[in-house]
Amino acid sequence: MSDPFIHHPELRDKITDPSRSFFRDFDARDVFSQQPGLSWVVDMLRTPEQRAECREAVIADRRDDHLWVFAYGSLMWDPAFEFRQVRRGRIEGYSRGFILKDIYGARGTVEQPGLMAALETGSGCDGLVFQIERNKIEIETEIIWRREMAFPCYIPTLVTVDTGGEMIEALTFVADHSADAMHPHLTHEEQVQFLATGKGFLGSSMEYLENIVSHFSALDILDEHCEILLRDAQAFSRANQAA
Image 1 (cartoon, rainbow, N blue to C red):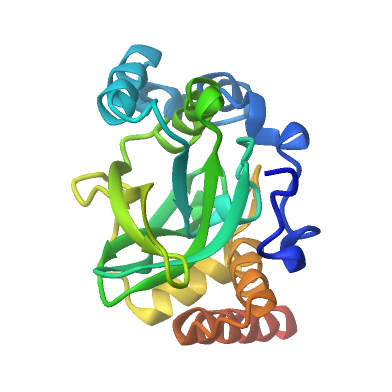
Image 2 (cartoon, rainbow, N blue to C red):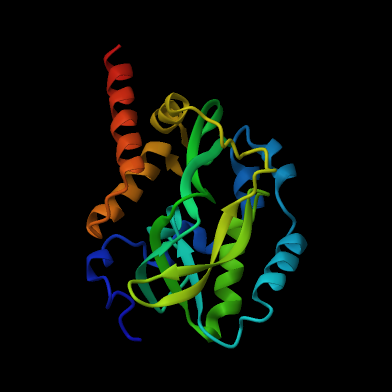
């Protein structure tokens, strides 16, 4: 397929070119060790051997065909891996929950925690699904694992995605509720505060949420939960700037 955006030309300028992505050569151990005050995070990271073992367990029987990856957070606008095509997709049985409390420096700190999304049990989740070409699976999934599986936060999971008439199997990353970073019982007020104030070396939590809503707007998807969170986080930010 010559044009990855043939199904969604409206996304052409909304997805970072993988060759220019910060995450293309991302190595969490190097990044965190070089960030002032974040050397303590390095001891929490998975080793390359642990990541490789996990990755092999997931893709061992899936090298004979193109591989789909379902994105519901930052992978939607900055996948970092090369993709053959991108489509709108929806999975049932899961929801996008803002439950990943970031105190580790990426989009929040211990003093001002940030917040990101993770998949948890729910009534459905809209997102994007990217197809990796069969002969690139080895290289591109290694890039994904260095990013998504750097911390013990997610469980790689195969899900069924509805792409608008065609049902496909895709890899995605579901919240590991045993991980210290997962906080499924945050109040709405706590979520709003963390989204409004959390900042780190990857940017702010507000920008993260704004990107999700922006992509949904381009696809004519109305996610009421994200819209309300963004509205309230923006109001919180304005109120605190005026104080």
